[in-house]
Length: 354
Image 1 (cartoon, one colour):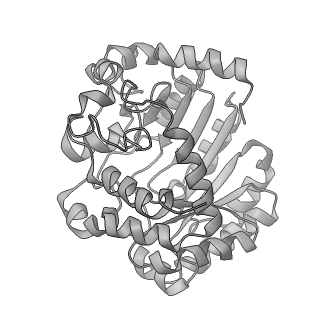
Image 2: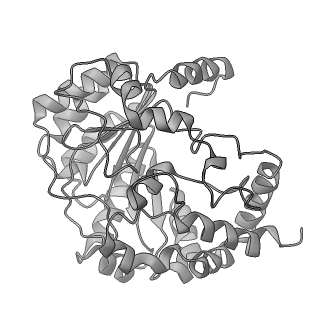
């Protein structure tokens, strides 16, 4: 992990000038499972093998240090091992791969094991440690056992393997049990609470999962250690005045590529393109900094959002400009998810006596 303070300071200066540091590549929009809340449009064109290599070369030449490979499901591509081989030969400091784990064959697991030292994390998504809950949500019977077999095989082969459990209505009451189960198997476990409600259908079906009641239940279900850690973190953040800060401190220095080559600051921006990494021959830094969205994001502060101005929770609320833009088309309307999450945090976590 890149952590030397002087290196980070210099990288942050370059990021502030629009030079990309962290890259994300959505290799495909296709997937073999059917999670209902998925925000990805499966009809987006997919770059050919040669075009993906052009994009990877450009990211490398632009100075991108870390690369996340994701989808859709990246292992649905028949050329995935060829593309990963190409990525591994480049000069990326850190490489992350996100997958649902169900398509990994023995050949692919052996390939990943052979390159384990180059993979910072291979992350697989689960919705429960209970097979029936997981399979029902992804819409494909047998998915849980396939994904768990892949995850276990990778872990035993020396690949740093993590699990993310995304919080949904069906798993909320057992999510802490799921965390304990996967931890007991040796996996790093992350809980995902955010949603990108990218369409009216997803908003209608999953509004409950971004409600104050949902987050209140979630925080009541997590362990006492998690509550204590959260309380310590947010008490420290209360001391920082964030009203004058930009909407996302980590946004500058990011570059994300969708499956058709479209360039966005971050994959949370689903309805936006700043250019195309294959067809636009300008330097990536120029594509980025000359776009109107970049200029807007550089100027706008939290205090410019009327609903956030003067809010008690400004200093501890996480505001994602990508989700705001995807859900409302701009930056004047905060997603209700942010407000509901922080209210639940206050009610359950911050109000608890030490």
